[in-house]
Structures are given as structure tokens and as C-alpha cells.
Amino acid sequence: MDARSERKLRFFAAFLGIGMLGGGAFAMHVGVSAQQFAIGTIYGLLISGAIGTFEVLASSGPLRDWLGSLPFSASLAVRSAFYAAVIIPVLYFDLGVLIAGQTPDSNQNVWTAIIFSAVFSVALNLLFSITNIIGPRTFLNLATGRYHTPIEENRFVLFVDIAGSTALAERLGGIGIHRFLDKTFRTLTGAVVDYRGKS
Image (spheres, rainbow, N blue to C red):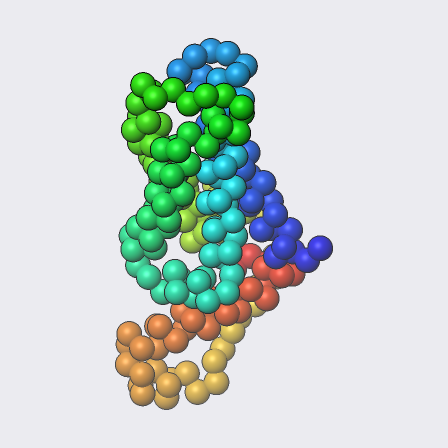
């Protein structure tokens, strides 16, 4: 398996795990029982499975370039809108309860679960968006405190020089050259990640 597929698989597994734990934790506040926990876990699996699939697909192909070209807040809004399109039907139609073989409770307030799922998903989306900007390894090292004290590491650094960049910058202008450089480095990032490098 290549590094890119391995990274996507790890991301998807983490997304599923966090979603199932979140669903189980929410269900436990309704009633402390194994059955409630199982139903919550099913909800977490359904929601995080659909959202995780979207995120894995959004990290490659034309959707990646389009989302990458949007401002951070707009990208977050697009992802959150997709999340809502998944969360609301799953919870409104009680799919987790039905899959568990139970009868849905018509008196249950579904909006509390929808609001919790939406907030949880947007927070998770924000976390993954930040991780995407600074890189998963850098985020993990920052979170675990690896760089809080000086350490020595061996690194190989690739410098990229674009031939004729000065003339190109004069022709495209300040904003145009930065758009061009952004697209160039986004394209190069895929090859770097394929060989387990950091961009």
C-alpha cells in the first residue's frame, strides 16, 4: 500500500473511531445501558462513515483543488453543510434505532441529538482543517509537546526554484503569482506525501 492510501485509511479509521465514541458518549447521557451505548455507537458509525468517506474523497481529485481554493471559513462552511445533510436525515428518521432492531420513540426530542452531532462534527471538522494546514505529524508533535524542548533531528529539505519566476511574477502581478505558487505547491504536495515526506 502506498503512503497516500495508508494515510487516507488511517484518517478514515480515526474518523470512524472518534465518531463512534462521540455517539456512544451522547447516548450514555440519555440512559446508562449497554443498549443505549450500542445505539449511539451505530449512529456514530453511520454519521462518521458518510462524513469520513466525503473527507477522504475531498482530499483528492478536483474537489480537493476546489476546496483548497476557497478561504478557510468558506471551506469549513461547505464541509459543515455536507455534514448537516448527513446528520439530519440519519437522526430524524431514527436510523440507528431501526438498525438496532428497536422501535423509535416518537416522544424523543430529536433536535438535541441533531444539535450535539452538528457541534461535534463542526468541531471535528475544524480540528481536521487545522491539521490539514499545518500537517498531521506537526499537529501531533505540537499536541504531544515534542517541540517544547530543543531536540536534534536529521532532515532532508527540498528547495524548489521556478525557472523565470521573476518575469512570471511581473507578468501575473502580486496576487496572480501567489495563486500560481499555491497551485504549484499543492500539486507537489501529493508527490511528497506519497514518499512519506512533509510538505
